[in-house]
Length: 172
Ligand SMILES: [Zn+2]
Image 1: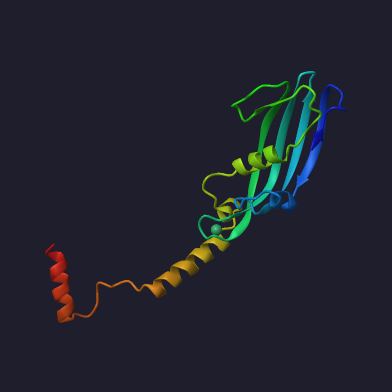
Image 2 (image 1 turned 90 degrees about the horizontal axis):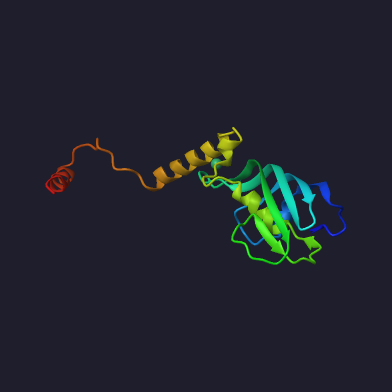
């Protein structure tokens, strides 16, 4: 929550440490937690505010490859403009508040910005450079699958019934 009414016109800087409790407060399961350092440069003007966020840290996400939850590094920046007048905006980066607004809750915007900084394909094990977790989990899974569903080998000792079946399928 930023209370900007008491701020003088001009530039103000804030920093936030966003942790697990922040992500827990949103009903979602994309981001399971994390630790992100957020810096906010707020430029207050008489009729609008420019909020420049920059952030760097890790978000805990499920790996698309091995489904193991692991920290994924993120880094980025975004700009939000708050207009102190009524109006409507289709632009996610511009929000209209009323002229007598005195505070703004940045939590939702911040959450979306951080979550959107994640790529579509999430393989935290690759991003961190430590592939061992992922690879081992995938190997384990593949091994479990090959035990459960043994593949029919080509070199099965010749069995007359099997040969007949092969012929049938070959004649399709
Ligand atoms: Zn993985």
